[in-house]
Image (cartoon, rainbow over all chains, first blue to last red):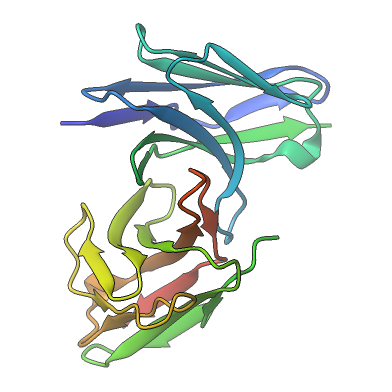
Length: 110
Length: 112
């Protein structure tokens, strides 16, 4: 069956450092992959999309990579800030559907 | 902020009650989705719609039903709530020309 793995343990980093979050998947061939941010008690907010034929995408301090051979995506936040503290979800897409991972909680300490 | 709204935000009800969770969007999106999310867990798709009068069940078995009579409105109904329905319910929408889903703030449901 399809499986998406994100580190369930919280990632604690110091302000100014680069945060790297991992999304691994099995038994899936997504056409695209998305990253969302979710704050407590709120709905997810879209951050970035990367397609299966793309290796890397950037948006301001955010960078996402997509390796369809390793079945892995890495999500980087450079120069992290306390305001970046949230849960980050990866979602695999095919057609009109998204399948979400359980998310990784990021804590950025001042 | 996305123009997608959910009411109520919080609901505490007794077992056996009928409830309707409301979801409306003003972005003219044709596709709408309902997800269920338990704390710290992944989102599970329970219903989706590709347009007016189109509804389908998602991957997660759910005892709820949905309707799509108007483009902007996608309510979810539980005929007889049970404690196992306690969860957060998230509504989302997207336009056919984009893969991005826009989420509402969610309804947190507690069934006693």
